[in-house]
Length: 463
Image 1 (cartoon, rainbow, N blue to C red):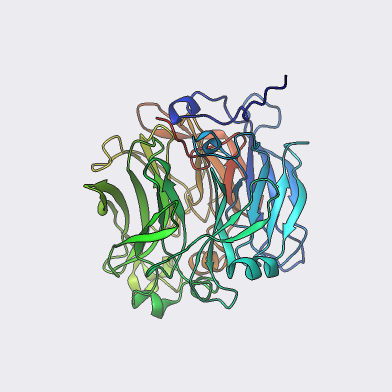
Image 2: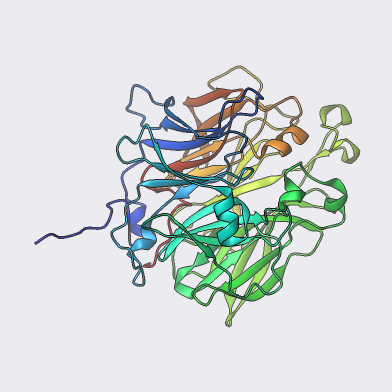
């Protein structure tokens, strides 16, 4: 008799995932911003502190096309395969699903034969994506019990609506658009779910036209970027509720739900307030059968002289924090907040999600500060951007590029790419690992995924 066993990197609960073996490799997308005809690539970084190549790039896989911009990506399968309603319990965490936010290609990389040299095994053409879904500019990837979910910013024509489409777990074919009834939802960015509450949530950025050439100042000041959170019936695929931050709060982006499936809350970041350039973190939560929003963290802008600022910020004489990513540790204790503008990574204890408490802060890069790193004497630009946390919560990795057109607006001297790591004190606080600084030079790096899973790759069905 043959006994099939689930992938050993799947865990039924976050409590068990925290005890998983430490990651040894990190996968990082690399953007080529230079006009030399070379493609973007997936880089593999050694994160095993006992390895002779610790902190070095040990593998590179070029994309089989040019003219795009790799941005976010994800695994084909994760711990949600162990949910009671999962029809695919024996799918492996093997393939990286890599959308291109500008060209609308989706590349599938196989990591199983050699994890340090992912192999291109499939490319989904933009025309196929448009024909089957009506969408373009694929963005975020999450593996669900019933398929691979991918968000898209909008239509092939550059407008909305944006939304979600599904890939089949087995053959990685595009199945079609997810939404049955989208209600008043038009803008789209991130999405995630509460599997235990049959609820999916989506956030808002802007249409492809609104983001691909940088921030459109007139539309920003008019409050036309995203500022709403949408609540959906996950299994009926229908819009249920709209929660509005108000047009003062522009660009409601990353969603980080509690990992414990019995907890019906999560965190969302807002990039900028039109009132004072501050950034903010919002808590969504369920109460008496409906969902609510509450602002729980404010991060103020910092005064600066005009000669220190890029043209887009000179009239304001201040550096906004520009919180562009957040991440929640698997034990739901610490929330990490990337302040890409001021060059800070904040750590908050969110054991009480209604009353976060700042417990740590590191500085690196920044529009004005240009703070350095223990491994180099150079001034650094960019700032904490895409942040990823190990499953045990002891290591946090982050990179410094946001999105090419926006990089140029806020760092017009050109971002030099880097990836760093901080070590976390279990009781709060963090410090840079002085031996981990990956210098990508003129190339830029964005999202990170950790081998075997990380704090933003898996969802769980058991507490």
